[in-house]
Length: 220
Image (tube, rainbow, N blue to C red; front, side):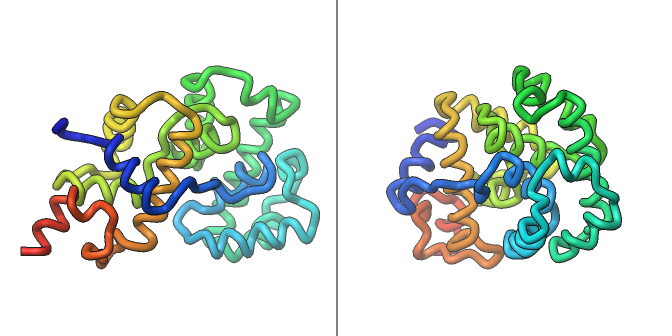
């Protein structure tokens, strides 16, 4: 068996969870905003902020580009780090709208789009890749803390935060280049981490238990 059998991992997760229609977001604008708000917090807090923006008819990159930081910060307060996130959202929105529209901003290849997103203050690799995958609908694999935790346990590895590009390349080189696969596989990792591969893992019920070195070590 190959060292990193991500195709088998996906098959086992898909058989367990089924196809997951995810990321949460009704519009491209909402997906972009949510990708920034979810930094360093959980999705329940993001939902509270999104609800407040919706109530004020502000789920709009164009409108956010013209907002005052303090007004936006007040509305997104539930997602934490609200002053920082307000400035990041405004910076991102202004950059996008400098192209005239979201569609025009996304009208470039993945490498160029990623480079431009990463040049915006406060937009890191995970946020940029989430925007590219789920909002721009371009295939790039998102690496988050859940993914890193699962891979480290399954393969008995020690990928750190600064190994983002290395782990991303490892996965992308191991599975077919397919937009829907990338989206669903990332969602599968999130579901696994939320339900089984928690900080205190529930190995006995995990769909990857027969493959996972951490689980095998725990069962001894």
